[in-house]
Amino acid sequence: FRSLHRYKKSVLDEMHRINSITWNKFSFTLYLVPSATPRPRYCGKGNFFYVKGAGDNKKLFKYLVESEDVPFIYTACKVDIKSYFPIPKGMHPIDQILAEMGYIRPISKPDFDNVAKTYCDMITGVILSDDCIIIEGNSSKYYSWKPRIEMTIEYMNDFDCEYNKKKYRNKTG
Image (cartoon, rainbow, N blue to C red):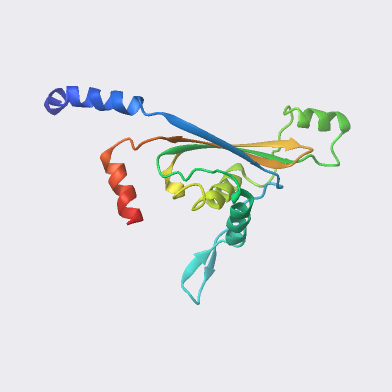
């Protein structure tokens, strides 16, 4: 604890600097039926794992945003994903209305975390430098007559410390 007292002013100064870093927010909607990432498969010939369809998802996302002004994020970020699944046709009409209003929510497959993984992987390399920069995430499932995925990304305008800045620079060369 002696060293803590010695660094008190520096720690307080850094806390103030980090708290003053502004955050940007970016949102977009993909009008697709939400889906989950399938389990990785092992390719014995090349001794590696792959996720079926991941490359196609990334190509689709690049195509969807190629004319948009999207940021390229390399600092810490928070991701919020809202997945709107089709309302089941077998649901009672009253329940369908309540589902559209958000009162009735999906409790079936796919799992919320697998859906989040699909769309975080999809934007990696296009909007996110790497999905390891996601420090916080939320994934919610809803029903809707208009299936879609709504994503909101909040990201820092600067690095929070030199260590993280160096890690990013070393990774990118």
